[in-house]
Structure formats: C-alpha cells, structure tokens
Image 1 (cartoon, rainbow, N blue to C red):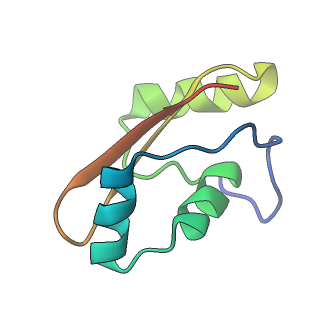
Image 2 (cartoon, helix red, strand yellow):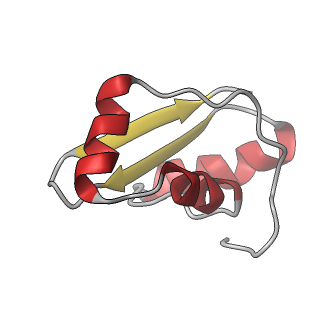
Length: 81
C-alpha cells in the first residue's frame, strides 16, 4: 500500500531517548521512518497487522509499525491518532 503521498495527517510525534539512540547508532534518520510510515510502509508486520493498518487509515484508528535497525534491535511503536 506504499504511496508517494501521505495517507493520513500525522498527529503528535514522540520518541523515547533509547529509540533515538538506537536509530543514531544504526545511522537511520527518524524522519525517513516517519515518511515511510505516513506513506504506507509499515516495516516488517505480520499480515494481520498490515491488514489492520490498511483498515485503520480509513477510520483514523491505532496503527502499528515495526522496523529493524542495523544494530539488530527491533524498534516497535503503536501510533495513536
């Protein structure tokens, strides 16, 4: 479902210091992950979570994302809008 345009408006963006540290260690720009998320690239989700996200886009519900950093730590988040 990845698109070049935003699928939904972003709400408040927050992160823990530990998550930002992992991203920095992996050389990942947090804005790149935000762009991926808003355009429909939710990382390595199971099919059920991906289907739930596609449904959630239409109703502004909770969304899930899962990206794996190069330092081999998984970064998970649940987005509330």
